[in-house]
Length: 256
Length: 229
Image (spheres, rainbow over the protein chains, first blue to last red):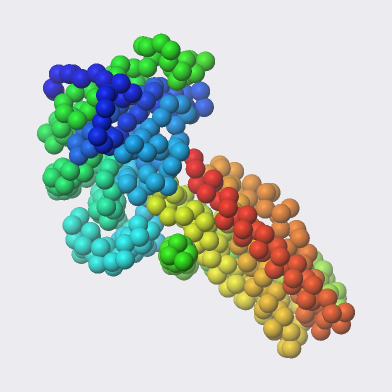
């Protein structure tokens, strides 16, 4: 793993011509009295692929869900392309594609119908062709007319990946994309990661497959206990955990 | 105009998706219809064999059966979204929140119209009611009542979909709100079946239409907040 090299607060990063793809400042999220995120400050440059590493409960999923506008932060701020995710989620949604743990598919619809629905919701005028193409890309064309109810976990994952391909988002968030996939499916994820990298799409990928993801990533960030403990490589920077700095409003609130 | 067209396309896509899922889950549709029919039958048993009494009570019993069946329907339409994170996915699409609400309400309206349309002849047979000559006002009442029910039901199904006790909470929250709708729908149905001797049908239909507009506007304006976790 590369050495940690950069520690720079997003607020003091100096003049920028374009805002970073992702910038969070002391980002915290509480669930009841538990802090899933306890003050994360992270900066990811546009076009970079960054691996989010860390054990279960580190806060990776919560960070991705906030950036995807699925949940709101409790404290701190998060911005995508300079736009605050909490203040203007409607501007963020077209810019972000998110693969979550849950596939978000409809069991009683076929694979093709699921993707056509997603394409329509994404405003694609070519919904039918786009869905067909995406199904082909993820290797599900032969079962396009089968209902999702009968799909294995791996096939559902592939279909969710196909849905990502319908989006023209500039930021792709992947939460354990290799989970439930066989060797061929994992190779598909690697291929897509490579394609997004070539297209200068920013990708944040949370994974326990550290070695596999690191081969495809420009940089990495390691989280633990809701804090960002270190970051390295290219295109990603962090400041030390807010809990170690004063005054840290988020961390103080969490402690209260 | 473009925004309206985009909203309409989104609402239609959601309603179509819900209708497909609902039709394919035949077990659920069949059991809802069976349940509503059973309610009508049991009400008939409870009121006894007095045919005049049954005829007088028929409009109220019809709407109670529609309400009970409708509660199951709107809850199921939202349950579709709760499975495997579909609601979160739906909420993250870059579309207007009002369009999502209108799509779900449209699906609910379709299901309610089918339910009401099938229960009307059942009521006629069970309670010995002559529907001839009353079709037009009955259809108008059913459509306006179904719109209001779908508008309120979609909102409250959205409120309760993430709750553990949603099966209990949905009727608990929704029934008091639809009381005016139930009253107006029963009165309008009674007037329609009785030939509207006092000319009150129009007023009840106006009340239903007003209720529908208020609930649709309120639902469309606030549903987006329900999608936030």
